[in-house]
Length: 356
Image 1 (tube, rainbow, N blue to C red):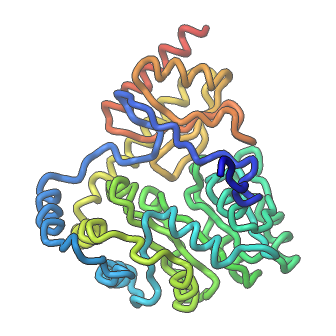
Image 2 (cartoon, one colour; image 1 turned 120 degrees about the horizontal axis):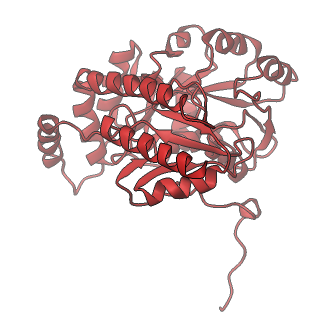
């Protein structure tokens, strides 16, 4: 045959997710940690990986990792599920709580993958936009869920790419107002010092996502996890891919779980640098800085797309959101090392001065 049948109709018009990952001297676009895992810990990881039998399938549910996480959060194993990064778990939720005849409540601007997953699974998407300052329109959200047809809602805390946490009081109010699955994405939670995990004890409809990619420097290993009610976790087990978390990633995660305290200084330094970068940005003419509880900062300025190009020409890669709906003229800047942050600030000042 010289032809092939069309792909599924829901793919029509969809653009593949593109993080626009390019080589640069200062990589400040993907919200990764700027620091490698410490050398002593890398040696321990190497020993653990060396002991992995590569000819055998991994533990299908990564139970040793589940046990470590359960112990850390004061939960049981059946309240934890790990995945191939948070992305797999996000798609699993779309499979388990979405589909034709089901409704997902989205709160844009937020992580675009949520809506993409809903479209891929044939789920109806209802948008309740954020306010101009990117805070949630809490009353509008409550009013929408009161209609009774919402099956799943995702609250991102801190929100990507805008950076703000969701108030715990609102999460509690929403959980009490609906039987929809309330999925709180806390991928950047370590940088905020806040979490709604304690609410799991009171609410069966709460699911919380966490990851090793950001605060624990393992973006290259792909390990995320969700915490929730055992019945919710069991539904997700039904749709997950077999052996989705490979044995090497499980070995790495086991070592990191045992050494989480060693990452505290890096998290604290990122928070300190975030506050410094925000202060310095506030003094650059024409730059509007939005509050952030994450390891990135969102800024708005005229001609942001051109600014992105000028920064990249100076070896600094940030994320260009200037053409995204509700994010016009916005750039997202990851918090890097002090040297990377200084390089970004210096480059941005040069760009602004040249444009005056």
